[in-house]
Length: 330
Image 1: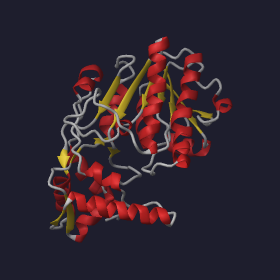
Image 2: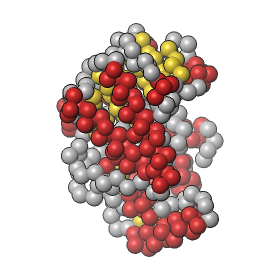
Image 3: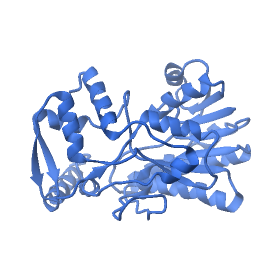
Image 4: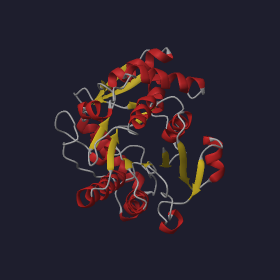
C-alpha cells in the first residue's frame, strides 16, 4: 500500500512510519527539511519537499497514493488575537484544505485527518464523547475545529473518503514536549497545589496506544466519522502527583487553593505578561481546564477501530518520569 504522511518528522510520525516500512508498505513523507527527514526516518522513505500552506509546492503530492495521514499542525496555547488566529489558521485550516484538494484530485482511497481533542474546547457536561458540544476558544482549538469542518463538509457533499480522529494529549518515552516535567519539578520541591474542591480528572494517551490505533486505521474506520482516542480511564491530578512523587522518592504536601482565587491570580498574571509583550506562564483558561473533569467515552473507537489502549495512566506516567530521570531533567 502507498501511504503519504504529513508531519512525519514529529513525535507521532517517527514512531508510526517504521511500522509501515517494516510491513512492506511504501511510505512518502511531505516535509520542508530533507536532511531532518532522512536523519529521523532513514533512507527507505520517499521524501517530498513541500509546505502545506503553499499550494504550488505540494502539487501532485498525492499521485499514486492510497492513504493519506494528515498530521502536520501548528500547536500551542496562544491566547486569542487576530495575529495568532491567522497564524494557526494558515497551517491548520488552509494547510488542511490544500491537502484535501490534492487528495481529492488524486482519488486517494482514504484520508485520515489527525485532529485533536482540543477542537472540542472545554466540555463541562458529563462524560465526553464524539457528540458532545464543541466550544473552541483558543486559536489552536478554533483552527482544528474549522479544519474538521472542511473535511466533514466534503464528505457530506462529495462522499470524500475521510476519517477524523481526536486524540487527547499524547505523551510517552521520547516525547519532546515533556508533558509531566512541570508537575515532576513541583513534586520534587515537596509541595503540590490542589486547586478547587473537585477531583480534576484528566486523561492522556500513551504514544504506543496512539500508534496502534493509527496503524489499525489502514483497514478500519467508517468514512465520515469522528473518533476520540484516549486512555482507558481518567486519573485525578492529585493521584498523578502521588505517582510522580513515589517515582522520584519524594514526599509531597498538598496546598489547597480555592478555584476562584487561582482563576483571579491567573487572570492577573495573564494580563501582566500580555502588557509587557510576553507569553504568560498560566492563564485563566489553563485554570478552567484544570478544574474541569475530562472523562472520555471511547466505546465508538473500540468498536470501529479495535482500539483497546494497553498503557494505563499510572503506567504511562511512570514511564515518562523514568525518561526524565534518564535525561537528568529532574
